[in-house]
Image (cartoon, rainbow, N blue to C red; front, side):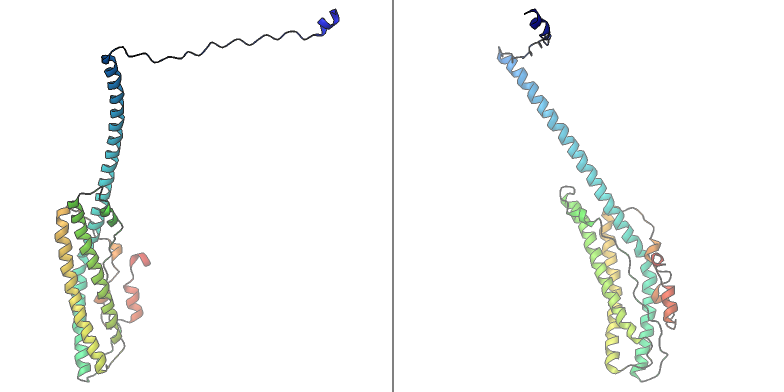
Length: 257
């Protein structure tokens, strides 16, 4: 008996009991005054949270508005700044069309003329429209602002399309390069191309005027013309007898060198 008691494991100390968790029961409201006080605290907290959220959201939208507006104003200002190149382009285009007209007159009279080695091509102004999509975000711009920006961009797109037609017209006129005589049908087609080139030049000037007029209300910043938007020399300003290889070299754009 004594040996069994000796071999038995000593009793392990019991873990201390944890104190019971205190549970705070809601206090009963004893009067309408206490109820209204609690209610007012809850409502005030909710309204404060909603107001702060609205303030943050309004600030975020205001920042987006400013960034979008400035991006479009900068883009339009940069596009319009390149209008400064148009007078030189138009002057050279007018002289080249007169030279072509004289050659067509000689060809019609069956008189010989020196074969032109370089007619040239229309020099396109470089436009960007990457920020234009911001005008569609009606949550940022008022209807008046959307009309203002939308009008300028609309005329800018029309101008871009007219200059594309101008490029196509000058491509047709290049058919006279290397020729000393022309058949009657070709003479007639080239005269139409000359007339279209003169019209396109007037149309470009007209649309540039519309763009400037509608852009005045936007108070665009002054931006210097981008030198990367023009070639080393205007193609239509080179002499008509310039060898083609030389002309291509002299009219290279800076960003393609």
